[in-house]
Length: 209
Image 1 (tube, rainbow, N blue to C red):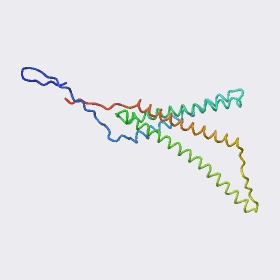
Image 2 (image 1 turned 135 degrees about the horizontal axis):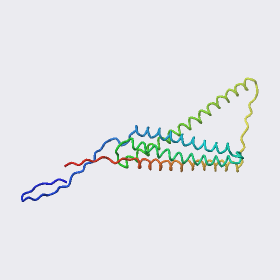
Image 3 (image 1 turned 180 degrees about the vertical axis):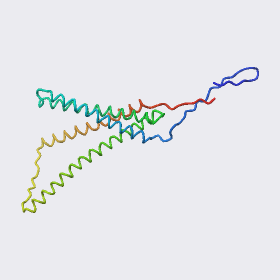
Image 4 (image 1 turned 30 degrees about the vertical axis):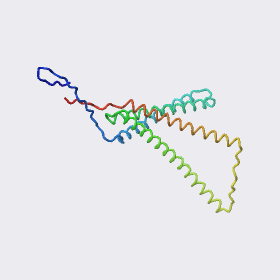
């Protein structure tokens, strides 16, 4: 508050002007996003290893490991989803804190980009692993076929027969997997946004007198 002296000895107060300081003009900060991505992957790895270790320890000390294996597998799967949500929350929080002062909308934007980057990287790693496995299998199959053809042996080409019940079961399993992926991805987005919103720092303000 500033005061101005006017004739007659009266002092009139004028409100101070508050001007926010904009620290960054670029709303997308790839450095903090990559840092948050690394933290998220490391957190996911540690938590997943912890869940697998607990499940393996339980089976090792169990009197009926074969009977308890399905339940332990289900528990490990649920823990994997929970650990993914925790990892995305922590990674987005780290990214928001590393960005410095920003408003909430910018923090949410960076959190969403971190989630999308994590999803794209995970899909690429999964696709690379699957294609690599198929590549090795195709290479081995090609060598076997060449050897058989050189030996003068005909390679049978049986036609797979799938019943209607088996086709419905395959479609049902595929639908469950796809819906689980969609729901898990949306939950991961929510966790990333929550972490970014929690870690966001308000821009500093200075008063001009």
